[in-house]
Length: 196
Image 1 (cartoon, rainbow, N blue to C red):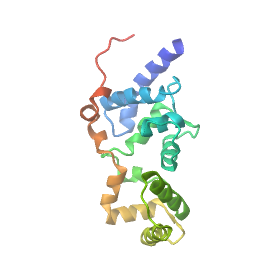
Image 2 (cartoon, rainbow, N blue to C red):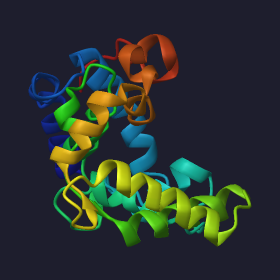
Image 3 (tube, helix red, strand yellow):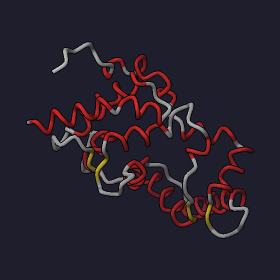
């Protein structure tokens, strides 16, 4: 029991630090902690978000397989230990904040086959029907436009250049509701509770 209190106290003390390291205000970090607690205790009450709990939060179904959900989970799992801690959750979510710098949204490269795999997974999950040839043509066109080095992958430098010509693309990497969590999600806002 002492461990749980210590862990909760430690998470509370880190809210100011997490706010300083991200685009969130302290009140936002505290509100997001409420969401984190709900997710992290939805299957196993351990204060960590497992892949199963992550899927449950996204789809309301912990067994649904999704390449996109798995990729997002892996981006949030900064320590690559198959669990998302609160700090990882906040730092990763901050990338999608409207005030996050563009360079934070661009952290790695993606190869042609990965894009193809993700597009087919997305189409499968959304019940959209496009021919394999059309998907291949779209991906080929994207790579011919963005992969200026011609090395079969889109790296951060190429992505930055593409974004400078197509800034609306970043809208897909932004969650506007993160700008004002208290208004958007009032149920996550902490009420004045007496300290333990």
